[in-house]
Image 1: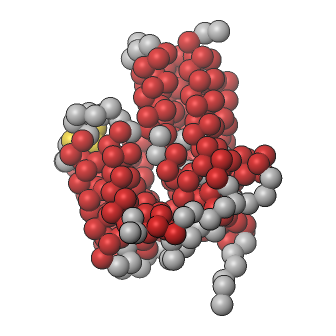
Image 2 (image 1 turned 45 degrees about the vertical axis):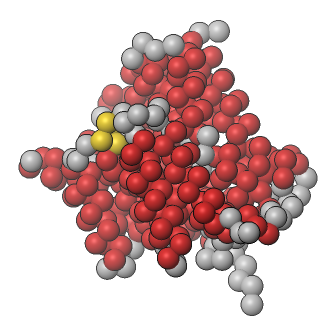
Length: 102
Length: 218
């Protein structure tokens, strides 16, 4: 098997297993009471991390670039209760325009 | 009163995300083709792995002349967050094991966040409805990118790289009800940024996820 297909097979099998683990092993049963507060905080923690890393991350380094302008513009649009599609277009446009100008 | 949502509600809510995901899929197809993956392997990878950042990482490692082991490790570290994420939705995915297994594959960041309810529960129908639309966008986009190739150009040049943090911000905002959730988001972001220069990609996100343990009840 070529390296390409080996990567496709191993990453696919690994990811399928990771995604399936919780629902297949624990599925349908309620989590213990003391963990409900934990699960509630998982989404804000993971989403906060994703926003930060995707705004400032560039491989292993942190940079401030045109993406920040796009995300800031999206933040303003969200605050003004703009529809989601508008928010995304504003973010992409603000980034593309500042890239062209700066 | 319990508000029940349908698969269609999920499919409808995910529209703007699916457009961005399809654009990202095109980007992945173009990049994978350029990295020597041919046209078929990128499509098979999107259909089986269905996790954008991990696929980009694996393809970049191979494109830069890295080993298979390095590519697979990078991708699986990026997907490690789906371990705890899977546990969080597990109570709501009922039914036989094969049915739980199939629906678990539709869990990606966007479908998971859209399925999150205000009370910390997850709506399995929203998860499946939005996940299916995202899946079609991702696999379809990949096919367009890998087959259409360079003729299309790379959508990343039109600011798509900022669309994703903007989308995650849009998913985060409704989650910020109450002080503890706000603290979790800020701490998660801070931990992820602090670890980025030192840890391999994916590890900062998993470390940030540990923040949720502050919600442990005694």
